[in-house]
Figure 1 (cartoon, each protein chain N blue to C red):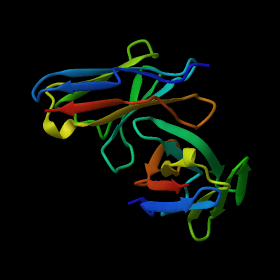
Figure 2 (figure 1 turned 120 degrees about the vertical axis):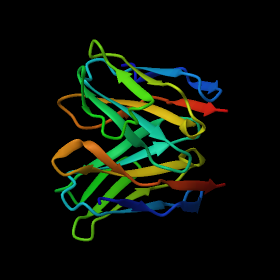
Figure 3 (figure 1 turned 30 degrees about the vertical axis):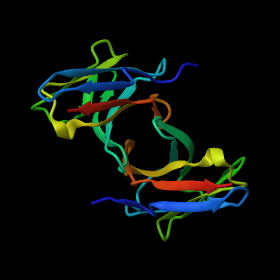
Length: 112
Length: 113
């Protein structure tokens, strides 16, 4: 069945760039999302990309989509300690933009 | 604009007891979702409402879980009786009919002892 995979952990130094990677299996996914979850909190929508786009930039966040390889990445420039959180990748089901397939999340640790 | 509101934030109950969670979506959002999130996992959809109609409840354990959204606005998710394995965070999300993005509430952390 459809699946979304992410590496579980990433550790970076404050001020460096972070790159969180995600692969998905459903080539028909229309939208791909990045959510952030801080401890004890709900999921915060960070950004999303439409499947016909290659790149989307929003302030410190850059999303790259390689549709051929079904690979999505989230780059956080100038990573701060406040960026420490779990980042979830999610892909919409083909034909049903309201049903999402979720990865297990990548735990980002930012070291001062 | 107020976000998705959930209550309570935390609940501790003994197994076999009932429990209920409440969600008020973002104003104007007609789609409402209940998710369950276990530790170290992504969210798992339990049920999705379009207005007052449950359009996807395939993952809802119907023997003990029930949900309602009577007036197409706020919603209640109930577990009766609770089991130890129900300990998780229960998340509510909403989206509008015009847009696809889902916005989440803070969740209710349930501990069953």
